[in-house]
Length: 320
Image 1: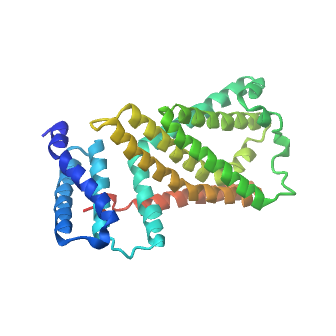
Image 2 (image 1 turned 180 degrees about the vertical axis):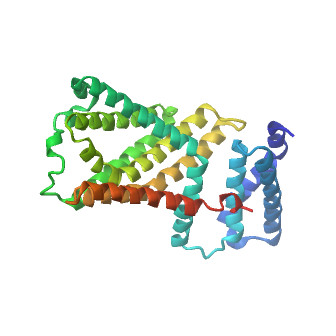
């Protein structure tokens, strides 16, 4: 059976199960035995469809769709009514968010590549001619940046800086996500532009002999911060892509579905931005050696990898 025939033959069952999910979520306390039995039958059928799809169409959107659908039905059937808000948060940040990242890794990678293109391009431009700095960087940054003042943090309000940075970065993430409704064009611009700023600054500090110092003040918070920006940017690119390329489903269906998934990806980045803001407010300006700052950045990378690895274990088995 080919993909189109598979979808055409079973789509009606999936639509009924999806509608039943909505109905049962609203009326769970007044369910009849017949409704529960019908829901369980649809659930079992869809589990079989997912198994078939994973075997014959592992890289197709229908497999991701069925995985989501079965996961939601499984949670409704077996999570119980006593699930607390804390347990729901744990489930979201411990599993759901990580699963979404893994499933949408291509869009996150594209966001990283767009940022890198902007960064490499501006770095080479400023290295070729330092005057390009004033055409590449925003005026408010180019006018006041001074490599000689790097590390001069004698009077720093860490709490205020941390709060300001968190707010700014979350705003960037929201804009990257909202850019999806422009078919991803604004998201693309935002990612490249942020890369341009970092690349131009890196070139400036290279020419000033402060390249090593510059990155020591960037990477402690930057590894988490940039990861969150790439995830948020990937969520915007994902939505834009599905508006342009809806696949075997209707464009309205894809927009609705991908908007939900993109919002989930965006929400998942908020704790990352909070952590990055705290690090940038307290660790980055701290009077510790540059080597200690680099070592701390390696710890943040290890923490991110461990978080994804632990949360992503058993992803394929989670709905069986």
